[in-house]
Length: 492
Image (cartoon, rainbow, N blue to C red; front, top):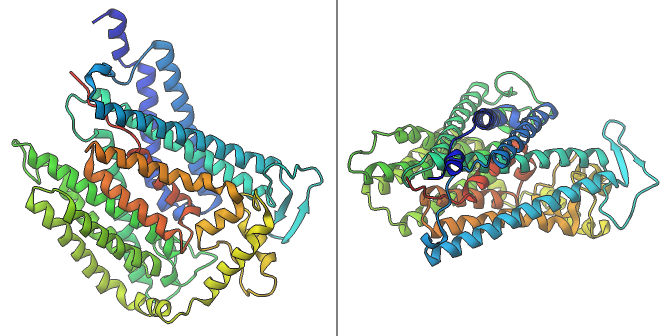
């Protein structure tokens, strides 16, 4: 090994320090975001934004150190060492990464242009517009500059978080001498799962304690909306957001449990239970029961649909170990029994309303959106401007203030216009990248159940607004960062 080549494999002290702070910030974001009332308040959103910007600074610092000192995270094998299949997979993966980066930059540029080239600003207290004389009708513009700037700073933070997590996970490769689960990925998913189960436990205790009375989020604060206990769930003022969050977590718990179980049992020196995977059993049971106990109709139905997908996946997956094949369905069954005991009485009458067709206000909202979408042209009404414009479009037909469309696709199409296709493309590119990793059998179980979690969220976005809730977007970014990162086997 040449002296300069040896220097590249030794991690610089400043790089190691930046990497440590990156890890601390990532864990802080993962843990704090759902507990901060779902990151729906201005202060909590800015706490997450600033944390993400700090991650961006650390990422730039690490990239600069690597460039200056010619430090590499891992040694890339010679091209001759790749099979033709590996070369094709690597090529497609690189194209997906370039597409993701390009679309994210275009998205930020679009939102920034809409904010700078705003048509108007809206005062929520006075409920009146202030129109600007100078704006270019041929460029993206917004009818609420304040809301659009808010979206820009949020999306900037989320994009930085996505790339910072990918880079941090990649730094784990150089420490591996055999092909196994990325240790940083394992730690990150454990924190997500344990934090999610602790959150669910608090949600359940809060629901039991306040019963049919007015509730308080985290036993502390009474929200301005959804004051009754059955409308809230834990720190979330809207029960459906809590259900959407938990429907992202319990599939990850199952994927991590299967991945670690297979690794331990396939290694003759180990057995199931010697590793930390048994901690995930109560996590699976608690988080799977949460969506039904929350009384969210959409969350409960999607949870049941994802259980059905899980069963189908088990039928077609080659799980050689019988214990793992039967254990997960048993855990899910226990979770459903727990949900039935604690939540069925609350959710049953709400489910009956769906089948009786008592959803007139939601349908009227969708119909109104469909009629006004074309009124705002190619560029839409401006990112984040839904709450502003919809009140005036309703006139006197609605008796309450509507902040969300309860259909993220319609809302994004109204506010982003035709360019909303950029947003719709991002999860599909991530899913393509995920399928590539499935093809290569890398972290198969984690990848498979991450796909189930993403599909569940995309379906939920048809009937609610999970893609407008910052804590859910943060978790989605974390999942997408893990599934789009291609593992590399490191030679000794």
